[in-house]
Length: 185
Image 1 (cartoon, rainbow, N blue to C red):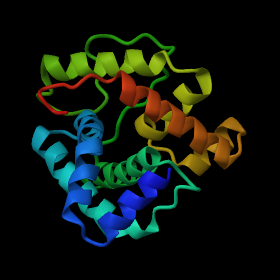
Image 2: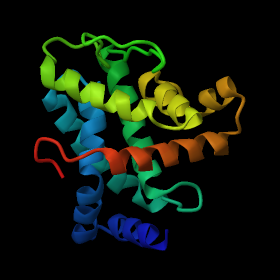
Image 3: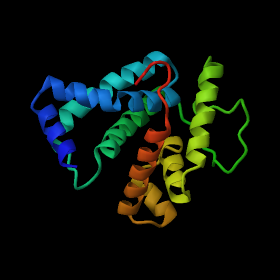
């Protein structure tokens, strides 16, 4: 926790090595999230750059007592992606993971997504489905349903802190389980 705070303080001060370390730790995770939700690979690559600019600009606001670094990075990523999806008028389709998914189901309505994207989506759905119930519901509603954490807490009748903790734990588990794809580490 102290190491994460120290890293973000160095990022806030413009330390290039700290920015590189932050990028090395989280670029792959941010890219995977963006690639699952945005229409094109180039949109996902642009999203990574924009998210890291936002992380650098807001680094001084990171508080390890409020959220882990991975949760904070993913919340900034999520905010950016939701803004982009709204701007593009592309909405992820929400369906519970207890429903049956067909090979044609996509996380995003986007032309030309191809078989690789469907396979990645299926692997991600399998990983999410294996999460404990609360964590799975929070991930589904936040990332696939476009809900805020406050809205999720109200829907599930859970305190905001519980929802944040469930999201943090789920992201940590997913991050451990997601192998490097396409040479992105």
